[in-house]
Length: 234
Image: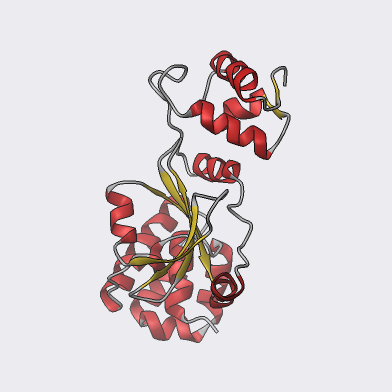
């Protein structure tokens, strides 16, 4: 059974719908016990229909959670499906994570990590070709054990395309200064086409944040040189 601490963080980070948290706040005594009477009263008095009011409440609850249960790691603050920028943000997230298992070719981007602070396992996918992000999926103990003991990996990040979709959904969309002559776009298009033969040019342009005509130039070169199938009219 989850604790009040866990439910509150799920609400803050967006994994627990606002309506579900509102219902929980009214009906579950453990929430009042955890928050204290004054803060709990503020919670149940909040206008959950207002995005601004809900945002302010989340900020206040996050500050309370950090004071009451200081954490060296950031696992509890990350969404169940998180997209983390490479650089300073990932340095903070990964400082307590240690790699447990690596998927290996052809899934060179994929590995399992465990937090040394809280014990949380993460399926991690390194999307370093397009948007420079890490896609992370929170795993329970059972899923982590199946990877380590049985070499059975969740399929969520098996396709590189899924990493691009996750990054785009999180607002990550990089444009190369010279996409035709100085970028990794040709390699990425080739891999996407090998994973999904006949993939439409318009889909590639959307995934890779390209104008359609630029995507066509790169796509035609990839088809001619690599022998993959791309629907250049799609």
